[in-house]
Length: 201
Image (cartoon, rainbow, N blue to C red; front, side, top):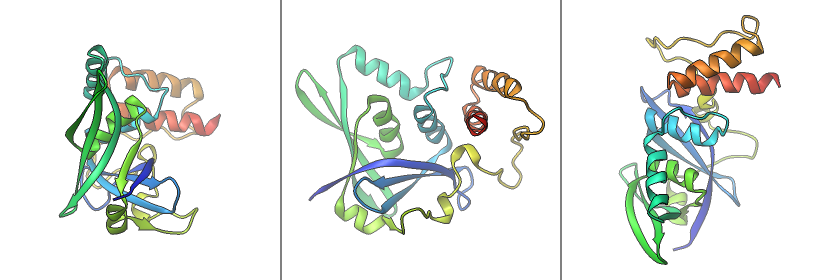
């Protein structure tokens, strides 16, 4: 079976599953995209790995795994999403140590969070993409994934504080809020603030 390389197109809050996020993977040489529902912790970990300017004061679990692996000369070479059963994706980490390759079973969300930290490519099989991929015209996006993680709306009943509007916060204030959010390990809020700063620059 032929492998298809994927990249990360974005993360959005799932309006259909409370507390869940949707990770959208896109085939590199094509228009199909693969949506995968992941948990909030994994979504934050992936978002932080994508947002290079946010540095957690303490290592997250996936950062700890990377440090542990590097200390013992273990490298994650690639991630393969190899199976889809009842809507659940199964993945493997292809690792190498002393020129010996090992295949390790892992959740897809964890695999992708680690792939980002090791700069490892992400693949799936063509038959999985044929079965679960969404194909649409270039430049458009499925409604479920049209909002980035950093731009998501609050869900009904959420007590999450909203970001100050542009007219209420200066760039200087936003930088202070960003530092405070990172210090408090509120990475989702930090990502939203960073996104607002980027819009103004």
